[in-house]
Length: 524
Image 1: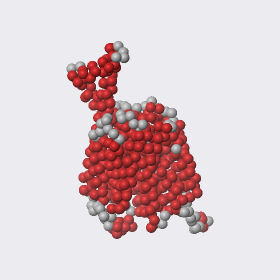
Image 2: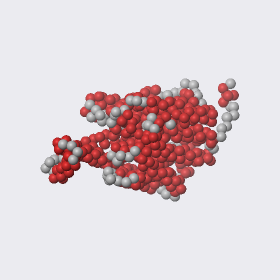
Image 3: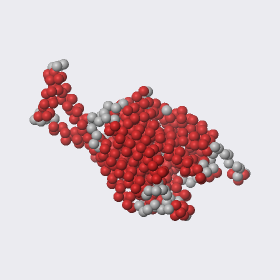
Image 4: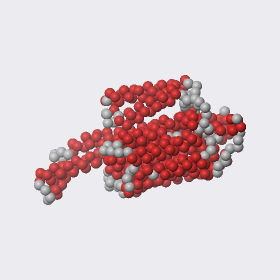
């Protein structure tokens, strides 16, 4: 009876209807990766938390997404890929509602974890469904649509998030997902059909040991990254204990994946030199990308006084630059060595970091827009090239596994970069403040002159003693502002240098293999 059911003709759905369902889910997931960044200062204020604590809202989402990616294949077999996909959309949508209703940082982090668990599987499953919906000769078109959606969403995210935050409240950046999520779930129910191999299977095997170790490793890593700075890192006993548990779980996880024949992920893909080098560079670029995207709105709003909408508007050129990079690569990829494209992307990424590293508090909007344009172009070029080249010598059978492994480590890199930059801003601002405070000395003629000027100004409105105290307070606030500025600039410069450090890795690449050799490799 089962064989008769299996041999029934497949229900045919217009691939463009499938595209609408899949891309709606993909779009809201990618949109949420950038829409919350511009609202971090407002959320921090609502939860009475510091800016570095508010970054937990981003890192928890990334780590939770990373946990789900390696288990996508098992969940698809357990529930059927279509049902699993719809379930992820519904969980993501419900979690978005919880995020909007959150009134404490703890509840928000928990809701973001649920959102990450729901959204983490959407990209890999969407990509697989799109590839199968179109015939082979139109798969390039399908991936172009997919890539365009992934690129356009980050363009709209900061602007839309800023507008909603300024005109409504930060809660609406999450509420906006609800109608689109419901539509995506209904559309997926009607317009997605699972092929036989993607349907529900009886008793699918999963590496429970590896999956448990993966969860322990990433959860403990998340705790250390989020709370380590406030606890003074390894000066706190509990940080040392949790870090030790995380390292042990990581080592055991890697060991189990190497030794077990049916492991949750196959680490053998790292034997492929192209995949290994591409993944290393992509992880570092992801660290720079997420770190910069996190602190840029904070810099613009806290130091330059930009509104949430203006800070989002100033980030929009990143998306425009990414679209330009996609167009350039699609036109010239067959004519120019991929290493030249990648080197150009890394150089421009480093240059944009250095451009950000020499800003001051008296800049105009163009000083922000131009580096962001370079930044978006360089990230788009680097990520597009390496995402393609790193998978080029991976066989079709290993493609899903390789994609899952790469996305897992990229998410970890993004979480580390986000937490690292929050620590850098906090620590560097303290260091610079400590170094500068000695200049607030009566023996310093510049300080004395400035203090007298401000004291005389305030003395016109109140007693001399209060006027002097107010003048001293104003000068100290200027010192704090300047030390914070230097912290941001120093962090941008460091990330710029990291991009230049990646350049020698390109020398380890061989020349791009021709298509015939690649096809033979994939068939093996």
